[in-house]
Image 1: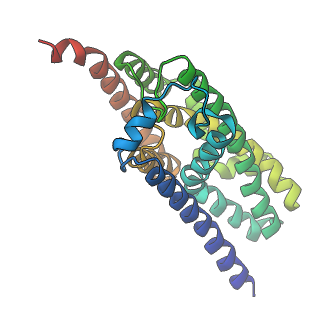
Image 2: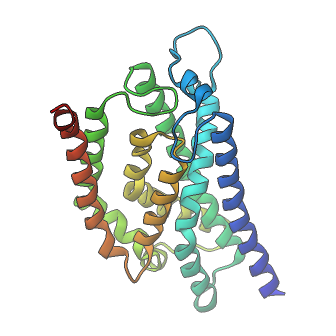
Length: 262
């Protein structure tokens, strides 16, 4: 019976991830954008709309935009939680962890990322109404995109990144230092782990404003990288090289208008 419960919960967990990705794909198709976030005729018309026009546009209103980001958080961040959940399962054998606590960790983690979804929704609306990005979250200026790439790339070398990544990379140490039992204890630990995870990965969410927030290819690539960052064997080996790639990309974005115009 314990094995049946474990299998059922893991299947439900991965099923939730698949549903989140399917919803994101369906939303992208409804907005007439391809997997790279490039708009078709209808998508281009929507992107060109002025958000201050007196009509209802989902991507210019907090509620629909917030749910889009919340679903995106589930699609992108739940896969990165697998090593953490495996670590918790190890403590179900050596300590007094329970399946209720396991579910609590997931719940606390999601609460933090949904809160971050609200924060980044506000940021997107500010950028939209400020004329920095269009309705699909695509930047209107290479300067903004380049500076954002440089900022996120530079963050990869910061002490904050190192500290937050250390917790995400070695969740067992966090569990041992903050161990709580039961569902409520799991939620509490999930909140803490989620906060460190936001501190580690916020930049990759913000980079949605470089290629467009509905760019499913970027979402998949960012998810893969964040999963690799948390793997015990290679996590520390990929963080700084990615920072170098982002910085080079940012510089290229800034100088391209000058080179391309020659």
